[in-house]
Length: 280
Picture 1 (cartoon, rainbow, N blue to C red):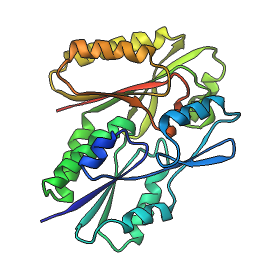
Picture 2: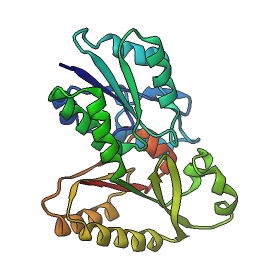
Picture 3: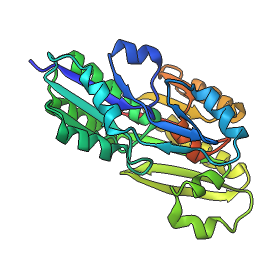
């Protein structure tokens, strides 16, 4: 019988209760703000990071976990686990998956690395499903097949109200020439198949609100939504509006609202948020 250990990175959106319940190991990224370096989730909270980011002179820098950081966590996995399954965020955001693959080649364990093609709660949906199946004694291959299906029915929409961070961080570099000349530009981004794309652009917050109204209608028309997440950087006013709408149209679907990770906050900037959900 398989005994699979689930491992993920700190960009994922999971509650402390979920991490404990499913015995998930989280490999932290590091963040540098004004020459001070923090380990994500270890010596800085998500809320404290946003405060530091808002008052920093320069854009914070995020770094993927080192090989040593991965090794330290893997060394703590008991020998009775037959496999280690690492579910890592999309390379569109970070090179963390490259470090994970290097580690998999180095360790004397059966370690498999999966590109979740997402981050935040959309990544969390996959991590939770994998952990549930691991507790049921499912094999790595069975888990991988289930995650392929879940991933194909996962959706992520992000509202960005300040484009400075995302341009300076290079995550939309192919659009930099067009966007940098526009004032008060707001964006709606989608993430699918490891591609971060602009779904809508326009001046002012109404651009995002109009698009998200369409997303709400899309959600309202779906009968098989299993879970929804809203992650945000700092501002709660519009997030609360979305929360109220979701509780009205899908009152029985689990909804998690939490501050996003420093990795996402750094690139998305103040005022950003994301709606993420999956169907079956």
